[in-house]
Image (cartoon, rainbow, N blue to C red; front, side, top):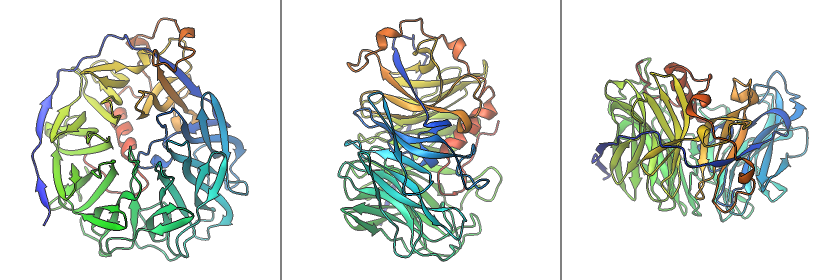
Length: 495
């Protein structure tokens, strides 16, 4: 029998924007000849695409127009190629043979990357090239294949042992509940030493891995799986549970009473963070969406981590200290506030005067990145939470910088931050966004900081025109919660 604990304590900190003393060197990573670049490609479960040595991987548009137009993989119809950026050098990692796309989703401590690439074979179900999971060992690309008679696969993340975790179709039949990126039944896999191992399911047709966050352990995979093939009236899908696969054993992680749960990731301790709907599938048959709570699974104990007084909360990242961050609704579902869960306590990270915020990642040194919005001044900020203060990152880079920082995605243990930004005139990151890297000045690896001695931007000069209403900010948060599996959405703020 599984114990379900509800032991959270709500802490509200009177956080303020800090005086801007910290400075960063800004790296605007160029594209591969096209208009846009993508870090968290396919929103791949929030895997780590910057490692501690500072190597960055992702996908960037090439100058090659997609030959599959109008069925393009990107909104701009340029072929994306995987890239690696290291010490100022940008490398096109290429594709499998043919005029194909590729993307890298994760990098390990060795600098190896995983992701997916198109092949020269057309998938008869989609009319587009089949996709295969790949591993880049340096500049060498390895085709990892698929499971059984399946046609498609993709790598999600890899650990420091070189094991790739991903998903693959298992045959060519039509899946009655196709929540994944393809139309056939799909299973999670782990690939090592040239062999792709099927992790199976919890009884239903499909299973999917979750993002790695900071998980570097071998033989450890968190994910989700259908438990049967009967659709629930409230969600239209079979019951879905989280799982933890550890050295060949898949453990069923139950829900918090409802019919679905989703895992965000596991850490090196084997702790799992995710969210679940509640008994009776509260809200799932209403336009506002399902009420969901963040949970922590810790070696057999399932803990409801609660909300900030509203109906829902969602985690986005878990570090190896057991600290999780994300967002939660406040009383009356009026606002979304950035949230830290630590030792069973939930802490509201929202600054005085801000009406919306969310946290997207946390490193082992307790540094947190995310976004905030002030409804009184219509001010959008990309921020760092550190030592009980909030730092406006756009005010910590030189005033003549080429980018405005919009989406902070990852932060490594050296405090280096990677995400997406916009150049002047860009109002859609999917069409013209660039990847940025922020390197703290004075960190010992900041040659070039001395070249950026111009006065840093003030908060007023960094107010973006892209998210100047609360509705637009909430839409940004919703997009950050999106993932490859078409899950029921959580409750959104009322206003």
